[in-house]
Length: 117
Image 1 (cartoon, rainbow, N blue to C red):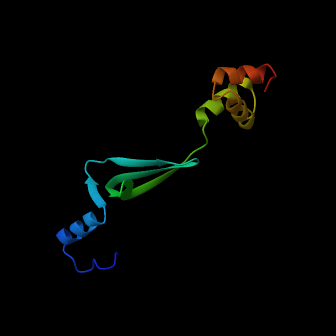
Image 2: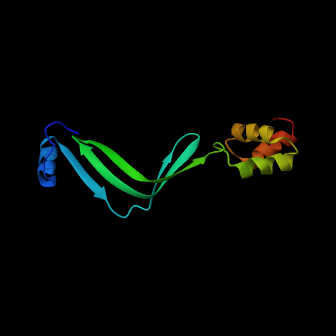
Image 3: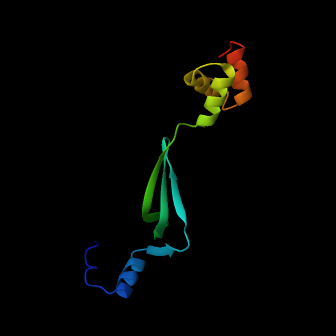
């Protein structure tokens, strides 16, 4: 807690924060918040979201039920399985071919079947 703000009414607290250049706003009607990381997504359901502006620097405070979804990688698992099946190779070989072709399924299969993989 900020020193000197203890015992203040909410109105006094807002005035003091405003003097320090801090603005807070509750964002209404938010259904979910998704934070996408490299290897997983954090999905916050039924969130309470507050936007905090501190002298032009905007931050968000989010609270709610969190669900963590692990990602297989940039290439969808279904694409990897399709290429592996069609080219008759392992899923690891299919993944490498898809990565080399920026996710182009047809090109990955052609490379693998044609021996360019």
